[in-house]
Image 1 (tube, rainbow, N blue to C red):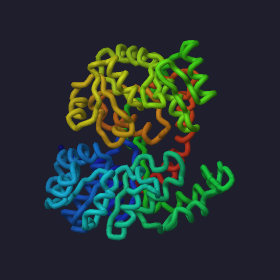
Image 2 (image 1 turned 45 degrees about the vertical axis):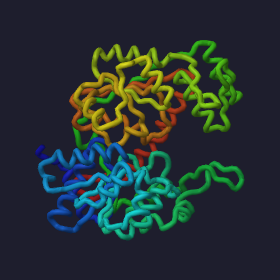
Image 3 (image 1 turned 90 degrees about the vertical axis):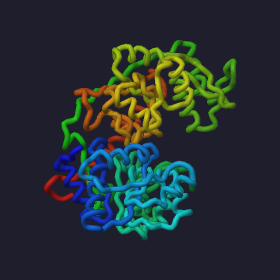
Image 4 (image 1 turned 60 degrees about the horizontal axis):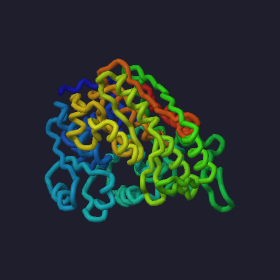
Length: 450
């Protein structure tokens, strides 16, 4: 396919070429992969400023999106790649192949650093936000080899979905601490003060006065941000809230679990050990089933299944993408809709995009990032909610993105009234305000300064 880049894509590609390390905070659907690959083609085959590139990405994005993008565009002819996936034997064989670009899933980054002599001069981190924890092995592994990389490109749409503390590890992998400091403790002390705490234990931090803008100013020279709505004619996006109501009996069960953190049912006992566990149990019960202490799924109601059936029927044959969270949600959905199919493999993705799947089932944590699913449908149903703003936005962007053939994308939320579902929606809205502030602060103006 011939590549006719938008102005913003050319701008972003040139930004990569002009900055040895940089972060592209681009809205989902703006084409982060082709922007980066265009720059890599120039670095590998024109200026010869790169020789051996490693792309780190979520597993499905690594095995599907990056190879497909390389093969899709005419102007990328000449790029060779090797997929470092599968068993250890297969990964070692892939690393021994002659190629320009090596693509690995992020779960194997630690293995790579520990078992392979680092010989990559250029590092691309797709979904940089997945390296937001300074304690995670994947971050520590890349931190170890970062000095051996002459170029680093970080790609993400949601750099700080929860708190600006999440920025430090990501920016460190770009500049090795030049802007936000070499240690996260110093970063916290400089820009944050303790918020929620219990004596010496600090549970959360809040920004010092004026710190937010200082952080944005510090990273503004190596990060650019763009919103899809500013550069593309995006399809209209409609959010719909589908409310379901518990019966008096079901409400009593919900309230008992909420108040006592214990619920005794005929087939087992549900026990929430702490607040986080209780949150999960309440969301499960709102969805229709809850795990017992011994891991057995105990059915409570089918309110959401009935609502989903109504939405599928209203779609009148058009494909529907259903986001589920718990395994028992998946099992119950599949029982109600035998023709539904989990979108998991490259073949599943292809079948969805060619209209062969009427009801696609997707878990936000495993399918939310990087998959191009816009050819297969324009309707998303959130069967169960997630606290993660990043996963929520990313999954919605599988359909609401450039290339969507329909003029409208509809996102349904099945919400059990008076339950934790409503709390999650409110929390997502509050977090989005902070996320929007970050993106706007480093937003690139075409023709002007980043």
